[in-house]
Image 1 (spheres, each protein chain N blue to C red):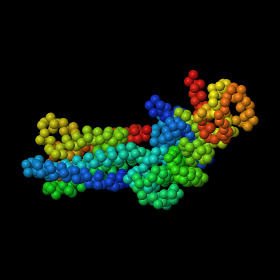
Image 2 (spheres, rainbow over the protein chains, first blue to last red):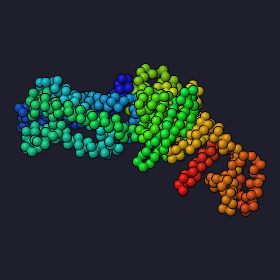
Image 3 (cartoon, rainbow over the protein chains, first blue to last red):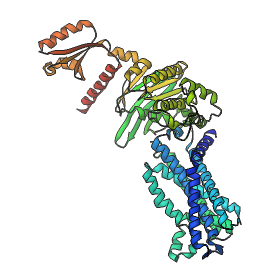
Image 4 (cartoon, rainbow over the protein chains, first blue to last red):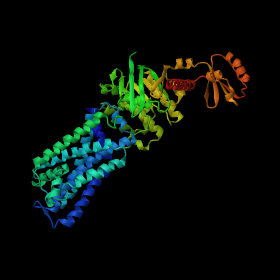
Length: 250
Length: 308
């Protein structure tokens, strides 16, 4: 247990020591999105009976959680692979399951921390409600877990920083941006509505937003099932990669 | 004395390359063991397999009786590895690095032992300094300290003195010798043959993934014992075949191994008869470097025969 806890502590300390870059910067980014979009759209638009700024904030919070959970595991792994310091965690008697859990839990914590930061600085700009806080927390945690696991796959697979950037820019960014952070999918043409249903991030955002307003595009229990199944699938793939020693022990 | 490290028929391939080609080796508890070989011989691959950093394709490895795959937790607890590359985690200070490393091995409140290691490696004054701000030599010392946090019975040093200044090298060897004296098994790979000669009780020489020599350092030296006569000849090619076969060619010198000084006179006479003109003559005592060169050349010869 101590090995796992130490690795978790190390992973948290790693991002906390550079929190200006890992926590404050993404909070500022989300704030800028809110200022710009709500300035342009807030007085014109209502989504699902909610003013646009209030609609946008949970989306931004969840997007920040997801992107930062991904960034934490992937950047930690690629950095220690490139510098070689990964040996310090490969030499000790730490199982691959402990390794996986420590990295993913740290990623979820960073996601939650950034998400809370975004909520605190943007919450002033709109009146938010918290209809179902348990759902908010559930989606934040499992969503962070999915992205933390995906970050591990990317970090294990990538040999260079630009490969990781490719993964981030061509997979994670489109998945999060096209998931309904900025709009309700009901405002999309029918074809794109259907396409959106194949994006697991859509369910993360939609379920998370349900926790605030009690309204959503799809039933929240359906979203929860999709997100939980996504987590199980991605986690199993990550664990299988780690068990095989792929790129880490070769 | 028990067996500290047991390796049987170890094979590790990288694509077409057989980096380790059936290595078998036993190292007893308390030994100071040397692993020598040219670059690419498989020394680091062997250590990686032992430490669980690489998965072997075939064969068996045990540390203190624990299989490195089946009982990996116990095996890794028994092993401290100083890696070859100068790696460090840039986020932490020296003390944080060592505390974290202790925690990975399940050890809490390890500060007494950490302080002792720091003192022995002359790092006490650097304890609070971030790893990034240390010089190369200091980083190397921290790597040694990291390998020792869990007091492993077997310590592996993979070329620990590459690029290290003389003072640190001396200090490091004193410390490692003390650990060996206290019962730790030490396995050393090095390019500095004089270090291996001075420190190691037994030596394995690797070439292209195979062990080509395995014996006590004194036996190896005795096998190629005595002196060597090194001659630089103006006309090397005039020597008859039997003289060429009796000698080796090292850095422009014909090297003749002597079992006694009485061999010198007839040898020089033979060379004179063949018309050899001597430009330089040196008489030296065999050291591990000569043994190494001879063993590697013999291995080449064997491969040549096998290839035909």
